[in-house]
Length: 380
Ligand SMILES: Cc1cc2nc3c(=O)[nH]c(=O)nc-3n(C[C@H](O)[C@H](O)[C@H](O)COP(=O)(O)OP(=O)(O)OC[C@H]3O[C@@H](n4cnc5c(N)ncnc54)[C@H](O)[C@@H]3O)c2cc1C
Image (cartoon, rainbow, N blue to C red; front, side):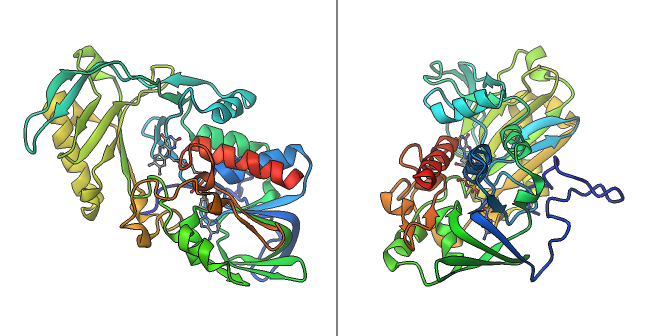
């Protein structure tokens, strides 16, 4: 099962209530033109689209999934409890993200963490309460979930500038023009900004082909967090607060390796969110859920079983994020290498995206930085 649903702030079909992001006249075999085409509707693509919109520069954005956000995905779980199953936190050393949130007037708040945490030191051992030092850097969350940033950016665009369920298959360059072939028609354009994680470029066809030295590094560039599985549980109450129990927990052995209190900013929606050990990716969702509940019950008690929702996203199963060729790569391998920011065909095909960023590559800050630097390149 894929993580995600349609992006909800564009016109809806009156009968089905499905969101329609494609222009009404758009159909297979159709040719559309724009000066600039952005490939990928993650944080990089959308931040760039927002800058182009403000500068009144003509563009279209093509996104393969039926939703925007890429590795940012908030599930509105149970009784509208926002659970971030992709990116969750930013930090004080993320000036570009902070500025963007300020500009879009999106509030943020600190992650509850605490110095009393649960820890499992050996396989099958009981979780023990231990004390750890205060976090050196506060981790901040976005009100309403990280997708709030994505939807706020999308809301600044015209709905016919964004094409969902439009997977780019081939990019051809002839006589100073591009033809982009997708599963959903053809697009011609003067300038292509490609924001896909670099490794995914091995799945696109380029004519003329990209230089081999670029491909060699792109396929060996780790896509940050592509192997992770996140889970979330929604509750009617923060029973752990009434019982005066910490939620934060760490283990290298149990199914959930990190666990946090993920209740909302207003303190009226309650959740626990965490990361599953990727060794458990072979299990099905039902079995994983059962194991998570067993683990949490062992230190938070049977109240865990009264959850109102269980959510998870195995990014490992997401074809527009994960590439199987990456199984041997180290975390962040080759991230930020200057070759990843290459441009081709006289600067008319520009490679962007978080992993290409010169700062904090792989993170949201890297994505926003890449978008802003690409916008500067376009203006020059
Ligand atoms: C589980 C998880 C937890 C994370 N936690 C954090 C965190 O706490 N803090 C933090 O700063 N960062 C975190 N990150 C990283 C952060 O999510 C990314 O750095 C950022 O979202 C990358 O944005 P991007 O636009 O560069 O790439 P992506 O989000 O990967 O966007 C690329 C887009 O291209 C689309 N696409 C792919 N192939 C095609 C194609 N052929 N045609 C058209 N479109 C295509 C994809 O669907 C996607 O929407 C996390 C990531 C994950 C997965």
